[in-house]
Length: 177
Image 1 (cartoon, rainbow, N blue to C red):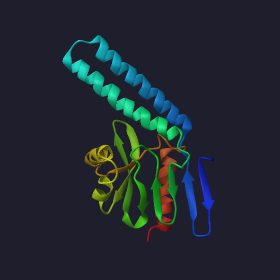
Image 2 (cartoon, rainbow, N blue to C red; image 1 turned 120 degrees about the vertical axis):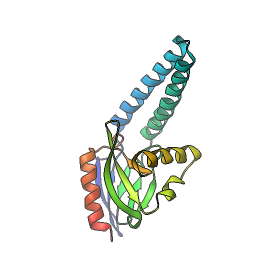
Image 3 (spheres, rainbow, N blue to C red; image 1 turned 90 degrees about the horizontal axis):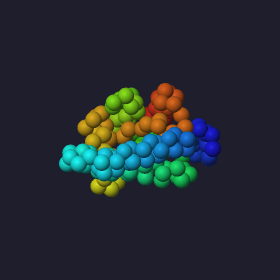
Image 4 (spheres, rainbow, N blue to C red; image 1 turned 180 degrees about the vertical axis):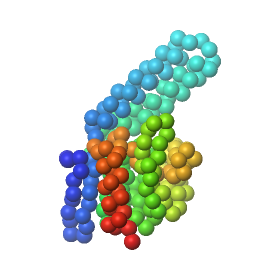
């Protein structure tokens, strides 16, 4: 599948952005390295704080690695842009379908030098409440950190963040009523 593919059917034109298998493998390898570091910290440092940090490190990056591994086998596009809105499938806490009439803006956000697009919506609580308890807790954290629960990173998509931003802004101009 090409990184960006225009799909045409009877009702609308869609732009599908593929998941980047190479980026997902890099993410997975990085997570494995942090899990190993967490285990080593837990095993070779006797202080209580270091052991807690080791367990947290291994647990957090273990979950992130699991999400990367699952996305490696996901054959669906990471992001679909169509007349109706967006379908986010780019991460372990992907938002799913987001209609254009619920999107109020798209902006660049940054946390610790990691840039991503934040999708502002009419009712952020609707998207915070989606998913499992774990997903909801991550959505609450995202909302607290950047002011929105829907954040799309290009770290798992086969596209640069600048190109993704351009495509989404064009689509908002074209489809948002």
